Length: 293
Ligand SMILES: [Zn+2]
Ligand SMILES: [Zn+2]
Image (cartoon, rainbow, N blue to C red; front, side, top):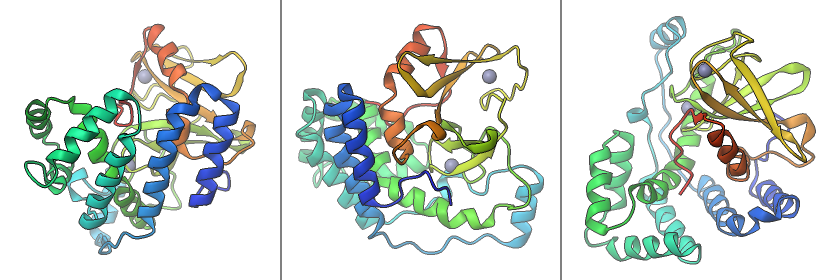
C-alpha cells in the first residue's frame, strides 16, 4: 500500500482542509467537493458487492495479451447505495454555484417521475451516450452535469471493484502500459515517488499502477525529444508533462514534495489552473474529464 495516500474519511478531510489553506483560490470549490468526497467515502463504508472472480485461464490470457482485466460494462455496483449517493450529491450541489445548483434542482424534481438513477448507471457503464443526450435535452440541462452526478454516484463501487480485482494482477511483472490494467481507461494523473518511480492513476476506477518514468501514456512515446514538462510559479509539487508527439498532457504530482497526504481526486480538482495553462499552450487533456463541470 502506498504510504502517501489519504485512505480514510478523516485523512481525506484533513487533505481537503490543508489544500483550502495552501490554495485559497480553491476554497469555495472545495466547499462543494469536500462534501462530495465525504459522501463518497461514507458510501464506500456501506456498499455491498458480490465478489468479482476471474478464472485462471482468463487471467493468464489477459496478462499475456496485455489486456485489461474487465470491460467497463462488467463493473458491478451497489444500486441502492449509488442511488442514495446520487440524491446526496444533488442535495450538496443545491448549495453550490448557480449553474450546478439549478441543474441539481431540476434533477431532484425529475427523480421519481421521469428520471431513474439506475437507468443512468446502466447507461454510463454501457457507454450509452444517446441516453445522456436525450435526458439532457428533456430536462434542459447540460449533458456533462448529468454525467457528473451519475459517475460520482457510481465511483465508490467502481473503486471497490478495482480493489477487489487488483489481486488478479501479476505482482511479479509491472504493467508499464499507458492504460489501466484493471479497466483499460487512460490515466487522469501521474504520481512521482521515491527513487524515480512513477505511478499512473486511472481516470475511471482510480487504480494506481506502475509506469515508465519517461513515457507518454497517451501515444506510448518514450522519446526524450517528444517529452517535456513545465511547473507553474510557486508550485514545486505539481508539474505538467506534455508530449509533442500527440499534443496531450498529464499532470504529475511529486509526492516527495507534498507534506499532506494525497487524495488523487482532490489533486485533480485543485490543479485546474494547470489544465488551463496546458490548453493555452496548445495541448489537450488525454481523457474526457468526468469530474469537471
Ligand atoms: Zn481503471
Ligand atoms: Zn504522446
